[in-house]
Amino acid sequence: MSIEKNKTQAPAVDHAIAIIDLIAASSFPLTLSEICKQTHIPAASAHRVINSLLMHQMISTDPRRKRSYSVGSRIFEVASTVFSKQSLIPFFYPIAEILKNEIHQPIFLSVPIGNQMVVVSKVEPSVSNAFEIYIGQTIGMHFSASGKSLLSMHSEEFRKNYFALDTVADTLSNDGKKEVLEEIDRAARLGYSVSNGDFDGRISTLAAPVMNLRNEPVATISIAIKSAEFDPPEARQYSKNLVQAARQLSARII
Image (cartoon, rainbow, N blue to C red):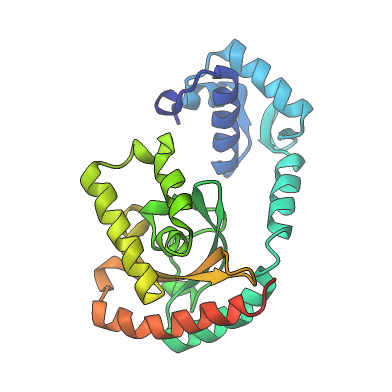
């Protein structure tokens, strides 16, 4: 897990993020040498960063292996704080269960954080049909049906500011931006967005925005379909149930 492609002008922060990402993804505690080998961080730098992360409880020493490290309690505190702010999650479950039973496809809830859409909850029809969509998964707004459906309900000024962000503009050509804007306009007309190939091209999704009482988009409900099984006419049938579910959730939040 090299940090070269994600380098910034703050090496210590880059190193800290790389170490946390590696430790969080590992199924067993890692030693300093293992961390250095996989991140390509010099041992002296890694040692200093690890000591700082230990002090801030972002990682912890693990008794399962000598001089090894695992995720710290602070990670869970931060995640729990963010999760607790998503007050619509309890309302999402019963609505998603009904939608899942109607269409027999996975349903997930995403919220905007910065310029990303983050999956915060999901309901799947069965283990055998489980998709590789996990809680905490992120994807850029303009790359996903959930993000485009959310952008479709925002003002022109919001969209202009969004596409002016360096992290967004650098990922789009002029033709690519034009295509995304057309998809956003289409989502505004239809009340939902379709994206054939989200999450590394393996999954197609339909998404509808969830609005608060001030008519602001605060989340999206999405349906996941394997791209190989995606059928546009069938998807249009799903959209009726999806839009209804999004409206039901909208009616339950402030």
